[in-house]
Length: 157
Image (cartoon, rainbow, N blue to C red):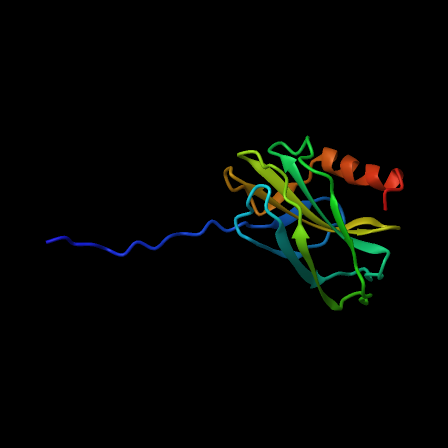
């Protein structure tokens, strides 16, 4: 007689937490597939209520992957301008489909930001994958800020 106990597979869930930067607001992020698969496109759905207005074509969703210490970008930043404006305090949702995923290292960071042409980063969420889960607030590495601000300064968007 074999006593078989059903085994429930535990799906790893990517947990996005607030980036720790002055005046940065919380956003909710879900990603599919979860966990993210190296070199396979992902879909990001981002929602929230911000104290700043979102202006169509002037505010964008940004997604970037960095190495485990946040110092080396694994890909270019994916940018999706909002096609609809939202008033401050109004609930928004934006979905970015087919976001390219680079070849991922064993441990990597994913940053999702709401970026405004005039204000810079106004909201940010971060997830560490493949490593130990940290606290609910994670420090945003200065290199990420330089990486994103560098695109703006170069006039890439």
